[in-house]
Length: 146
Length: 146
DNA sequence: TTCCTTGCAAACGATTTGCATTGGA
DNA sequence: TCCAATGCAAATCGTTTGCAAGGAA
Image (tube, rainbow over all chains, first blue to last red; front, top):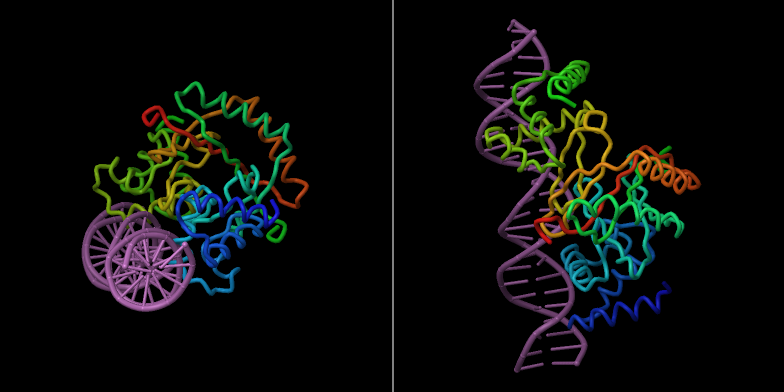
């Protein structure tokens, strides 16, 4: 999604939550937008020039998450990683490097995604488990670490 | 895998690592064996009667992981969850309850697993990413939380 | 003025580590 | 005897929170 459009959507969401879309929050949203995969708080802070204090950053991430703008992932040891919610970034999965820990977004062809979804429904349905979503994590070594 | 056989395998692995298979470590392995999904350190400690100090438990889990006997997962916010490695427990995936955080093991039919594997190889191969494994996490509400 | 937002410092909670003690081969 | 294993307490690290100051409506 282009910056302008995304910004508008986020502004609307935050407004409907009764919170402001401040300069600091815009900076975090922009950092999330340009990222090629979920980012840790430290990585986001660095990407923004280390200006925003971590406490403010975490608070912003919490506000964004409550507004449904961002989501947190915990696949990597100990550190949370944040990214735009899928209604803003599109549905995708993750390549996780087992050497350096970097996480990269990856999209699957619609047909495959469809198949995967059927699989998920089929396997969970019989267990009284109501499916809300799925996440496929592919583990291996990234180009740099091979 | 039956307890006896698993115990033998673990004993062999630890022995080849030059570490002992002590009473405390056996207790942790047994707690992991009977679990129906990855357990947090606190859950394991409770399952074992709260006798083993957390520091020892964490050290044991580290030893087991280094020996390839157990693995750690971080899908839930803040807490690590541990389970037997797949060569001991069999390949499986996880149902994660987005309400209570509980994680349950789930196995897929061989055919579906095969399909999934092909999907993974296909999607990651073109990116210079060498695949070591995959993990499908199904998010939703468990029977108790629906 | 009235809240929302921010920054700093302190608090928290899960996990790790230092160190002295215990225990198995 | 000797070194791995253990328990306790203290340290670490990512994340959260209390509180007073700053800012927009």
